[in-house]
Image 1 (cartoon, rainbow over the protein chains, first blue to last red):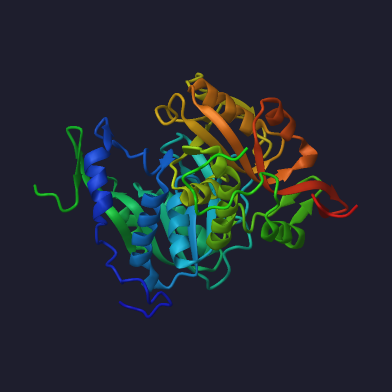
Image 2: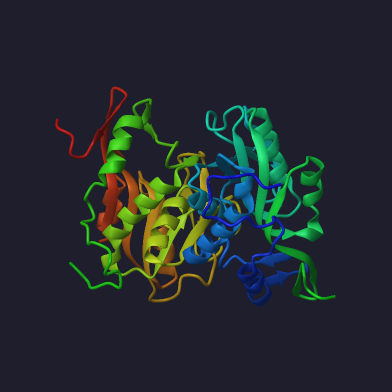
Length: 210
Length: 210
């Protein structure tokens, strides 16, 4: 599928093409905790290098522009930097879902999800008026793990009558299988690096030899 | 005070020089709630226009580069976009404090503050290892209101042995007097727009005629 897009200066890159500078940095610099958690906080969360983040945004834009999004959607906080970098390349507005305590009454455009990083549950909510019916939305986030955030945002987009046309993640943790739920909904998935497995304190990336 | 900086391509702009495109947008587009809350969510929080955010980052960089910061510090979530835009112009790393429930044991580099937007209290924490002794830090955030976040981050910077050399805020709400606490600590304050007063549903900006 190749649509003409207004971004004639951008190459069309397949959704699953690894972005090698990122893959290399994960290989060299990631810390693995308990064979379960991958930490690349020093350039993706907590601490951000603006030029590298700009490169990640460029790589993401090259993989998603052919779906002709009109708005980039993400969730606070760790999605904001990669989504803003992507939105900057495509010159599209960015909207982010905010997180609230789940004990509020259930407002429009909100979903309660499990929060693996914080524990317990959290309510994701998109402010009203920014997602309009028929609008083509691209979701951009830092990690695809179990997919809870992505599915909740997909529900919110549907509730607004808008159309989720592509999802993009800087890093996919394939061993947590968030991909399945998105594929089931027919959503294209762009990823810049895919971690197949965590083993003996090391990261095994898609494309590594067995 | 004018230090030579590596940013010879950037003009040196006084800290209190209004950034007129922002001042104009606030005048035209801000919504005032209860003569107390100013909403410019549609371009500063919730929804972000990347090109305008880049302009804000450029304007902030022009006001703070002469303090020769080595790192930009902010707090999640709404500080991330303006801080990243500023860090991008200066090509400096960005670190952001994350927010946690305050009922955890008190770790290093953390401070509990009141949370006017969420209600109750929240713990701001900077991950260890990113602020190093002697490092020159610039704080960049979206709003200066009562100054609680800025003072907590100043304390965290001091705990790390680093030096807070300048603070920068996209919008100052002068009627909430956060400035006093920062001035008392001798901190320079850069602002792009100053709201003097909210009156009968309108925003009175610094420089407006009485």
